[in-house]
Length: 263
Image (cartoon, rainbow, N blue to C red):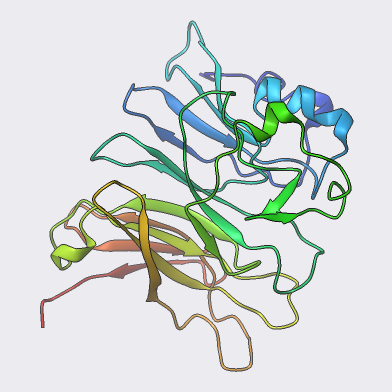
């Protein structure tokens, strides 16, 4: 039984084969939070009133069960998020964002974001920013409207350009050393058109006492050869019941388990 029918989630005229992943998590309020990527690399200005209204290029929430939907837009100005999670220690929403293509191998950066509040009164930069503070080619000659500028929420982490940061989670287990408690793990799928391939690894971001990003480093790699050939492409990382990590790989068609023995 569908909670929301096709054609209701996204207007039929905006359905696309681009950025079609519809990642969801259950929030602290027991609602579903669903990310909706934009169907263009960078859309024209005529598209954004509708996108902001229905949550395309953003994150929406609605009830988990059939009945009253109570659909709400909780984030706008996102290009294509394929991973989001709530910090279990304080309820903050975090999400990855895959940024604009076609601007060069080394720009713009990808993003790991912390929501500056939930609702359409917070804006995460797209389409005026293509990632970080890099302006998109399509909009760099235009002034950012005051209504957008005043509610801009900057990314917490700027990641390597085109590494394709996807699924993410907060670590709550006890198998790994204590420093990983409440850290963010996320998968980098790897670039698809960069001259020098990059990504194909699992990253970890540690938070400070205020719940902001403090340090980011590589946690696991080895999915790419020295000549840039992919052996695998991580998609998502999740915590298993014993505190180990599960990493999915859509190139090799496998799920890896990463454990820690303490030696």
